[in-house]
Length: 197
Image (cartoon, rainbow, N blue to C red; front, top):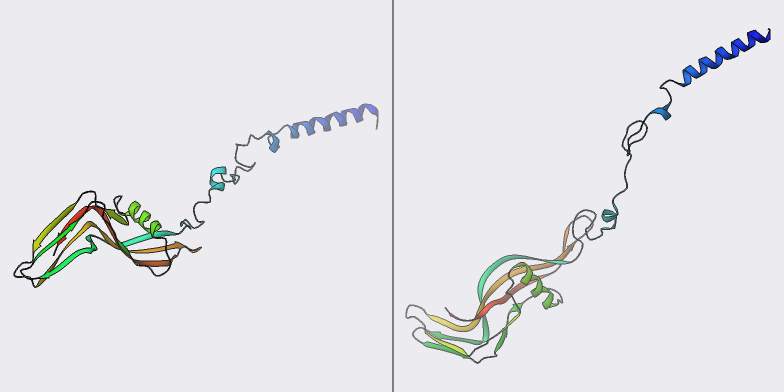
């Protein structure tokens, strides 16, 4: 083989190689979108920092912290036992109280409980005027005669308020409500009031 023929063959081979390499077959020439791989499939993204750091909600979406639930909420008169008088038909009943007199509501529970936590939760959930105790700001009193068609009756100082059932509990890992304590309550809400029945 002479040198002239070898140069022609080499040049032809190089031209053919360059022609093949210049085609669209190389992936390096393809533009890839941000967030996708070279085949166009989306690349899984890590959660945002805010989402990853949020530990206030249970993984199943249930709040893990203990809380209260209320049921059978009814408006009622919350009387002061020390300022309640009773009588039979035809008797006139009388009650009076001096400024500064204080009386409380009632709470029952199955296990030891901080009553202030329950009252605060009821105040937030049921009515902003709920409290555990009420104090008279003025001296007040009243009388009432038990009607003839009524066998007996009562007259009392107190306050309009609420009675309700309550539960304290939290959610477990399966989002099931677990009760840790329960009971009833009757709490004053409005200003001192005199009622009879």
